[in-house]
Image 1 (cartoon, helix red, strand yellow):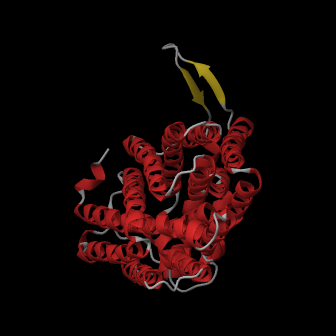
Image 2 (cartoon, rainbow, N blue to C red; image 1 turned 90 degrees about the horizontal axis):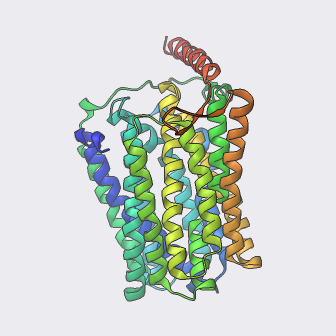
Image 3 (cartoon, one colour; image 1 turned 30 degrees about the vertical axis):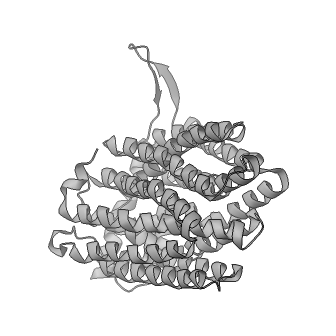
Length: 437
């Protein structure tokens, strides 16, 4: 489960990311809370707009970000993006501390942070492949999710307590300081131990080549469709939790932070389950998407605060099982020369759908109540699983059979996609050789 931590460079990266992610989750919790309760009167739509501005650049800058990840030194790019995120946290924190923050300030900083994150995210994803071997890559991807969700478990709880005690401003300043940790870990990484990866030369057509590659990989297309549905309409947890807390249960900021951490407990467990698997499987992505939909449906009808908390644990497990496995599947089955651009596409579709989904979910929460907003997430998970199952039945001879040990097993063929993958990888190698020469 923790085999990637044997690698010195990955251990440094893991610890630095854990510190930085904890600070980022603290800021996100404080930001959501001041938008909802201090700068507006429980306006879920305003919270949705904030999320849209923060995640929208991932979709718009996706092609350029992927090209940066495949062309430039990823370690250097990460140092620049981490420094920029720290300065943005510092700026917003000073505005809040001195009482000058307005809603448009939060919008502006969310947009700026979204631009920097759009460049940072695919580089971070692709950089992991330089830290560990190809065999350990699925494990490293899953442990990255564990680090992220562990921070999600700690950060919101601490932020909720700090907001209640000293206000939101110091939370932003603490996040700014946390970026020192990840920058130190990046600087301490041993360059000689990094795995070399292909670098693109200056030439036209690199962006269009990535789209052609993905279009020919029908299995990746299906994964991206599932990720879009669940990421767009299902991963709006700040809206779901904050509105359920304030509208349905009449609780405050401390309970908001606790519930965010409760869901993160399940998310950590789900990412660790993914880390145990030797390789990422498409069948796990499908089952986890369906289970996510069912968990959201149960959460939508929970009568009490604590029953909602239990449902959030299930949502955490299923959501991270799906996304960690989908991430690892795309990374490990993509040609190395294409990895940065394909991961930019993946992340753009995952987080870039938020500008579409967050305002819709926020509007639904305002107009019909938070329970109906959670029903949208339930439908998204079930629809994603249904689309993938239909594709497997029609194109890969999906069948469910009962084995001699009385267990039911899912069986399907993947020969067509393997031939497509081999052809595409050969084309990438030939193109890279020509560009290099």
